[in-house]
Length: 172
Image (tube, rainbow, N blue to C red):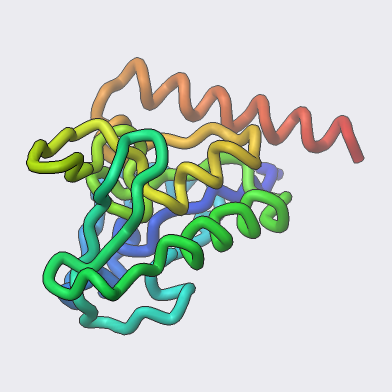
C-alpha cells in the first residue's frame, strides 16, 4: 500500500476559482501527476485571511527584504500582517505536510519571482508574504509551479518531499 504523503498546494493551481479576479490557474502537472503521488492540501492565503473573490489586487512594495502587501489602487488595503501570521501558523500547524507547491509571481505565494515596487523601480525577485513565513518557520521543500516544468528541479522537489516524509516518520 502506498503511503499517504500530504503536499500543500496553492488552491488556484488545483483549479479553484480563488484568484483576485475570480479565475484559477489550474496546472496540468499538479493535477495529472502530483495528485497521483500525493494527497494535495489546498490553501489560498488571501481567501484564508478573509479577502473575498473577486477582490482588489494587491502588490508588494517597499523593499525586497521586508515588503508590504498593499492594494494596487487602494493603498490603505494592507493585509501584510495577516498574510505573515497565516504563513507562520501554517508552517507550525500543518505538520503532516511534506512540501508545498506555490503560485509564482503572487504577492502572497510567489517564491523569488514576485514583483516588488522599490521606489519607482520594479524588481522581480520578491517572495510572497505567506511563502516567506512558510519558508522561515518550516523545513519542508517549497517550489513554484513554474519550477515543476524543469525536470531536474521537479525530481529534486519530489525527492525532498519523500525525504521529509521519512524524517517525519522516524520522529514519531
